[in-house]
Length: 66
Image (cartoon, rainbow, N blue to C red; front, side):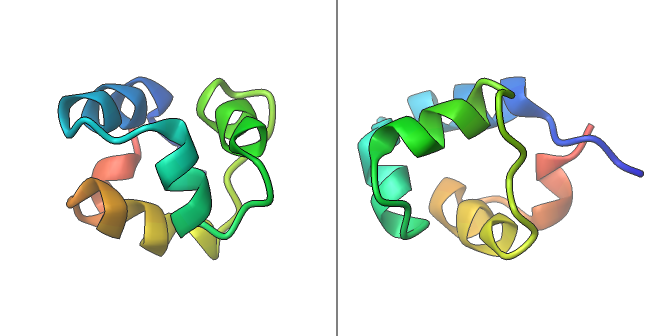
């Protein structure tokens, strides 16, 4: 199974100047901490979140994988 590229996600978000709180809001997460845990690998991104994340980061879904 393909692995999510957390380093790419973090670097891309920072390069676009988007906060974790902004991404959390767009993914409809209740708190920025929930996004932070995903980005840091404590929790896995849900499959339904990946298309939204790709849109926020302005990349294709395939770019989110290693």
